[in-house]
Length: 231
Image 1: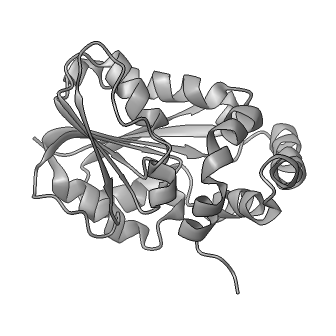
Image 2 (image 1 turned 90 degrees about the vertical axis):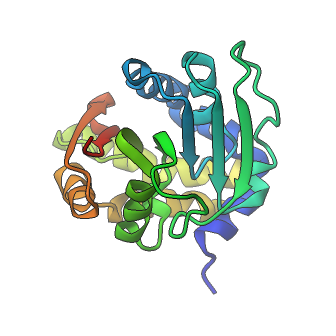
Image 3 (image 1 turned 180 degrees about the horizontal axis):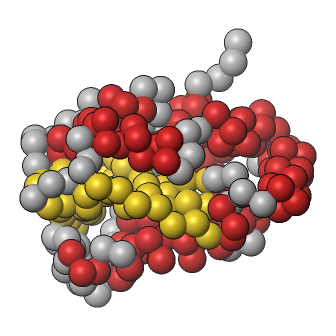
């Protein structure tokens, strides 16, 4: 029987951060920092980090956004949240709330958050339109949602090179270092099935976001989507 994404992430939680650093040569943290900097002009006070995992996005946000007062880390997999630091080391002392929760039925009232971040998690949602509608619901008017996802390069040569690395080397690395080849085979499979670029923005507009843009890094290997809720 095939494992669910939650089961896969539960198995690899202990080695998740190490594998991310090795797979991306540390670039995943840089991409999160660049994404968080997009929120600085909005000065959010209350942030939702959805599909928070081990807290990388939340950690960068609390370090780089002095306006933050509260950060809610929500993930379906408690084993992942167990590796998120329980206290925020940033000087602004924003309060962290760690909560097991489902992106398809968020346990928050309408218009609760000033900003939302999702790092490499939307492709794991079983019903993306429903999860996007939930994100829209809990985001206040004028708020911003940032979705960081893996992508597929446009350039044919770069795409072939990247896809070879992603399909063969990453699962091998997962087998050697995380003792779980299946979990790291799921990663390229879920990336291939994801609606990239304008296709994803179309889903976001259907969920209510009135405007959306995206920027690509490393030739499209990583894509940041910036979504706005009408004021």
